[in-house]
Amino acid sequence: MSHAPKRFDFSIPVRINLYSDTQSKPTPGMKEAMLNAEVGDEQGGSDPTVWLLCDRVAALLGKEAAMFLPSGTMCNQVAIATHCRPGDEILAHEGAHIQSSEGGAPGAISGVLIKGLTGERGQFSAASLEEAIRPISRYSPPQRLVEVEQTANKGGGACWPVSALREVAEAAHRHGMAVHMDGARLMNAAVALGVPASEIVADCDTVWLDFTKGLGAPLGAVLAGTSDFIGQAWRWKQRLGGSMRQGGLNAAACVYALDHHIDRLVEDHANAASLARGMAQIPGITVETPETNLVFFDTKGTGMTAAAFAGKLRQAGVMVSVSDTWRGRACLHLDVTAPLVEEALAIMRQAV
Ligand SMILES: *Cc1c(COP(=O)(O)O)cnc(C)c1O
Image (cartoon, rainbow, N blue to C red; front, side, top):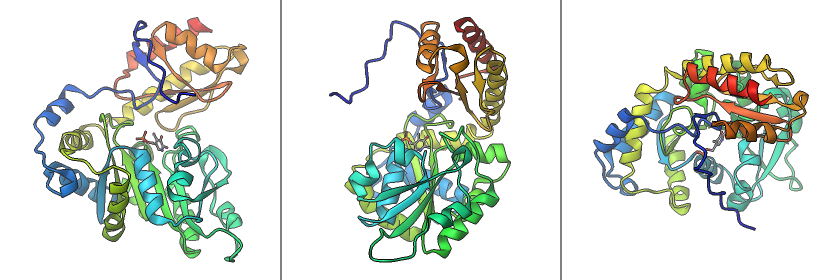
């Protein structure tokens, strides 16, 4: 069986792409920043633009050091490999991206187990974390790492409140575990909560930001932590082939995103809210109230599966994604303006 992606059907143009916030195209300003980037050899430490990006992200997140990597998945895997030894256990929400969507990499690369915790909106409480912690014994896998997702993707783009994060981290640390944040959409949370990112992640030992989600860059993610941790992590970056050459071209796009694409995330959140309000009025569709830029919906009441609904929309130039039989997701990002949301709603009403 092939695992390659199906070739896209380019014969039907996509006018409104709600499939994912990864689908935005680099803006003219971002491309110009890339063209003008000063570059060097990233893995040799001589690319000034990559150093600039790492310094900017470390400062933004209040951490000592940071590392540029090609993707968020690699940030998670480099962090897990650096935190853990084979046989260790990670505690994470059962819907976590590391569990469901990274090809089994924690097992394949680091030889670790994941214990799935339950809780609403992709979050779990300090109490349920404590319940999952076993007494240390030679029979059970060492529990090494607690992982949290901000925002929780399958949790509907929900934001972990700062107080809940603090309680979870306090419990983890009390039991000798480290805390890692998958911050793929951390800046969406920072904007939605109105709290600086550094404050949200203050109790996390390691954290990364994706630049290819709402921030709109074509490639890249940045992992941050102590200087010692990032120093250790470089061996895994090298092992996994994540050390780059003229990475400054892409780092320049990320620096541009830090300067131009954070404050505007409020627009995505407002557009998500109006999309959700409009979809909720379509007979048979129920909508989870969005906290950020992700709108999850259920098509059961229409009698149409999420895939059938998505197929109809696709024919009309609108793309959404399918999570399971009845659940689908629409993502807002910088290429989807308020008028396009209205247009998408009209097409959705027609489809139902
Ligand atoms: C997208 C995503 C990732 C993976 O990031 P990539 O840059 O696509 O590798 C990890 N975690 C969450 C929650 C995500 O949404």
